[in-house]
Amino acid sequence: MQLDERKRKILQAIIRNYLETGEPVGSRTISKYTDLNLSSATIRNEMSDLEEMGLIVQPHTSAGRIPSDKGYRLYVDTMLEEKEREITELKEMLLEKEEKTEQLLKQVAKVLAVNTNYATMITAPSTHRNKLKFLQLSRVDKHQILAVIVAEGNVIKNSMIRVREYLDDETLLKLNILLNTNLNGLCMEEINLGMIAAIKQKAGIHSDLIGEVLDAVAEAIKADEDLEIYTSGTNNIFRYPELADQQRASDLITTFEEKQLLGHLVEQSLEEKPETGIQVYIGDETRVQSMKDCSVVTATYELGEGMRGTIGIIGPKRMDYEKVVSTLKTLKHQLDDLYKK
Image (cartoon, rainbow, N blue to C red; front, top):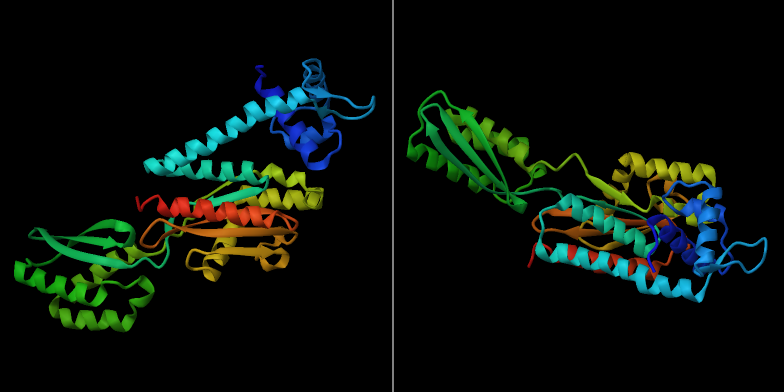
């Protein structure tokens, strides 16, 4: 049996709500949980059509609808099949190492929201305390030096530096040895003023060049400042009465839309679990004021050599912690393995 998108979503919402509550489902309830932005009257008309098709029934004259056996069968055969296809597509994207990072992460957030019925977020991988791996100075011409800087995560930055006088091969070799001996394996926080002064002193008449090279190194290995965050399932907030009153829901939705406050949650997760563990925040344990009535579960995934991101699931305090933690662990390992295969 083929249903159009509107009827399919309404039937899906009826079945999910009935499975959750055991109570007949009315049009006003459905209007909160679908993304169709339909009026209650329009939803009632669609529900009438679904009833004529034998997919839902009305147990009492003034009650809402419940799924029929036929409706359950369609749900099992078709709608769960769609969810499986989504998960399969995600796994294929992970295995194929597609470079469409944004598309992949948005899909991850969407699948998490569908599978948990909570709000979800995921950050793009970024560098934290990135370290210098290697530095090479090469002569381009009489007045230009190319500085090639390789940082963790195989991030490569090139910087052209003008010089006043010609530098021969022996001088460049000595400067390369000086810089790599003192800087390799260090992150920006570890390159202090005393170290810089000592390197400049050893460079002698080439101290100005060393200063410009160190500026280029600082730019290459600084931590990423612009955090990209993808979210999904915000409307799932309305599923839980303790979060669905107007003020709480409005504050939470604003947090997800503006995303700035989510950055504080990411910072807290990375500070408290700097490696790649699972962290659970209940109520006041989170720094985000609008989430004081929620529980938040986060995991940090690793894409190799300093490239990390955070996955988060936000729901009521009565969330299914066992399912959420298990789901996050599985997904975290899939993302960890993405660059290792």
